[in-house]
Image 1 (cartoon, one colour):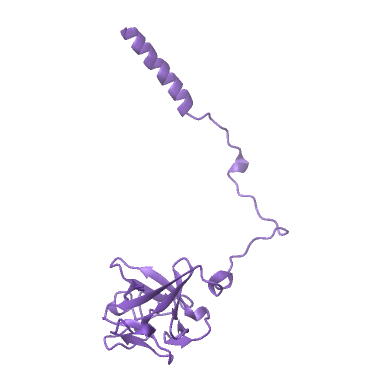
Image 2: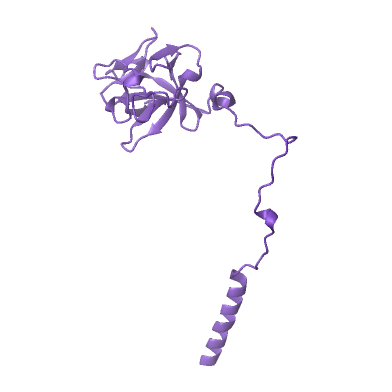
Length: 197
């Protein structure tokens, strides 16, 4: 009986090893070299993010409120002013967050029907028609708060280590100048609060 078990085990090992191991293949030299692109072939140029779908139709929208760590809700008023308010029930705090790509959003005031934008100096303003200045990079931090940095002027702020212009609300409720912001400040941290139906 012991001989039978040993014989079956050896046969199983032989079968398994022949199935598990792939057959050896000889690779030719041409498999290791990249074929050069000739001039008559068209090489797709890297398309600009702004020209693809960034200024087009958003892929997803949701109505939220942005609550800042300094205790204010971001408010885009119908008068075209930006600031923070402590009132949760203010209709100007409702913001339509439009997803324009991976971690790229536009912020549109629901009541004012206008967009929050940032210029090349880091100053936030309101525009009725969206441009590429209205696009922001959304990043979820380790503290579970979101930051919003200008996409167009990313890398232009020499005032902080990340070189970003962030949307930020001061302790008095006014919007902070983007050149004076940094990722470590609590004024740039926002919590996304979904609209309660």
